Image (cartoon, rainbow, N blue to C red; front, side, top):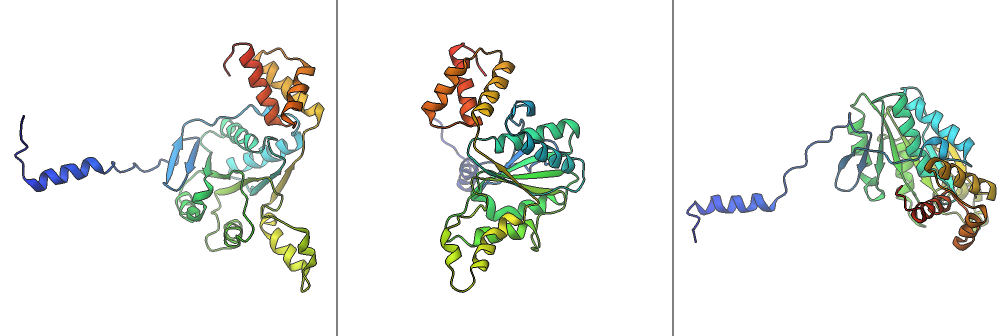
Length: 276
């Protein structure tokens, strides 16, 4: 057995270095197709996972609006902040990812997707400061955003970022938010019962959603749309399927949506012994 004969201070310094993780290298904001910004900081994502735009069926009008706007941003033209709201599982997040992928193919290196975790929203002004110095466009993506009753600070801060505040997002950055609620914040019928000024109560709750240049609704899936989504995926993957079986799958799930359709396609692939 050997004994470390070095100076005790040197041994202590070595031990501390082993305990402290190495510093995180600075993020290269010009190369990766996507990034994640969370409470720890930023990290690059080397691949965006998204279906082909042609496979996103039943949301044709929404697809056209989103892809056109993302392409404008990628090209350096005027573009809107976007709020995608409505029914769960109807492809809001998938459409955003797919639109960025398509824009990256049309404008290589021109745009990146930055997904911001909700627990990191308070530090988004620092992110804006970093991105404002770069010769690249960025779509900031906040998924499934919703504020609880009584949270007034969060919505007002987001309103300031969108328009008019001293920390508003820079010109090369646009925000895309998905939410199940059209107004993002909860609303109640009692708003109309305010004895002083009912219009003020309603306007304050709608003020956040009004800051988005594009507010795009996603609605419940019809049976025909549900089957069309399955048909598109199945054809693309070379899978056989049965209409009655597909409808029975949705009945067991108690819902029809793009997400339920994809889950059925995943089931078909598993039955066929295929990976997707």
